[in-house]
Image 1: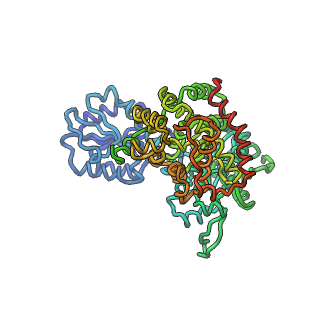
Image 2 (image 1 turned 90 degrees about the horizontal axis):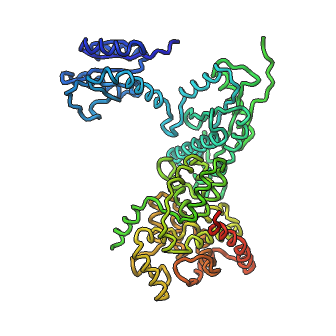
Image 3 (image 1 turned 45 degrees about the horizontal axis):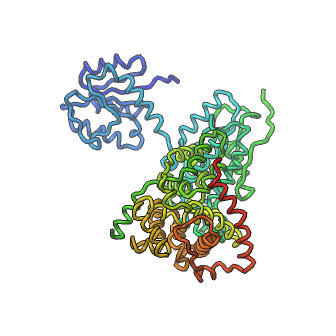
Length: 313
Length: 278
């Protein structure tokens, strides 16, 4: 797979198009369109990394409307849009023109290349964070995991999730449930970074699923510390009465009233010391399997993969 | 000044300055790269300004669980070492603070120590939370002294010459007392409701609805520390213990004796913390 980024350029002015092409062509794959309508098919069908659009006094309302629709779409809104304005163009309110950055024509030679690279860079940094915890999300997690597997380094992957989170949400509502998730994200991040400040990674898959990656020798004690910290903090998310009881009353999946223990946390750990993984999915599966073992033992628990694998071939 | 105007003035306070002796020690701690979160935690738990600062940050909406955290050890787990270090770097000193109410730091720390002793004796699940509340119970005095230094000096001298309780002298001057001011700022900073309630009612523990036992403990600690003559809280009187506080605590004579004995040792340690220069 080539790593060259694709920049889509929409400009009526042929002179402008050729200037942009000349500046960017050594660093990017540039695809030109003379109006936004004709570019849509390309944008919707291939993965572009940036849209550069020429906007001036003569730009019609339809162009602006289409641009705003692209930016308003949850999937394509991630695409960074870079506007190039005529020098005398009066910039409207930013909420009428959804772009991420701009440059005046007379600065093109000096700034375009670095501005475009910054803009793409920024978009990549922000694209995949979980909105609740601000931790890296699924795409970033997979990338990180695959990168580590490809490099061949020995490391460990932990998969954490909560037990009895559903009855908690049912009883107290999702807004208090979200508070618990935000707390958990913060707790895992600080505990992991406290044990291994460099080379560790924490991500939020979604819901109550979190992952972290660390050196193998630190991960088990870190997981135990996460559980201890969690036990100390989770009671403050309950009402005084539930805290005193040590359980809550809520309904199970069949709708029956039942008692549930306070939320606990299960952590499963996989590592590539005894078994070689080539694809991230295999390693995630082992971590998830270990987590299921942890769950069976009841209460907060850690399980690490201790199997001896025979090396095939 | 009417009460509303006074309240909005107080609520505008962003952070409290600490006293020089605490800051000196703080710098030593921050500069030590090997210091652990636990060590920082036990240091912070000894100072009312640092404690209020940490609770303010961890309960701010940025982290997403405002009004939940009332203990320092929990706060530190959730904030992380870097945030805590950074936050402590911004602590400023207010020389006048020590002069305004010399002894308030000792009084507050003494109350924290005593409240922990009583909470443990009463088998409370979270003695640390009661101890934090006791440490912060007079935060209103710091706030009033900081915002209205000249008026507060006058109140202090009024309390002395007219032989008044400090909270009566405050009331005469401001129409509110430090318990009100403390509760305002605690609320403003999103402290947990239980903590606000203890600060607000530490002189009227019978009014506490949600945490009567904890409020009674802080009330009793306040009085015991005054009775021991440890620190200075604005006047030289030892007020009577509220009868409902006695009832809700239900302490035997032996209990009280042993609490007083335990206080002896712990208070001299607390004194070392505040007075030593290392």
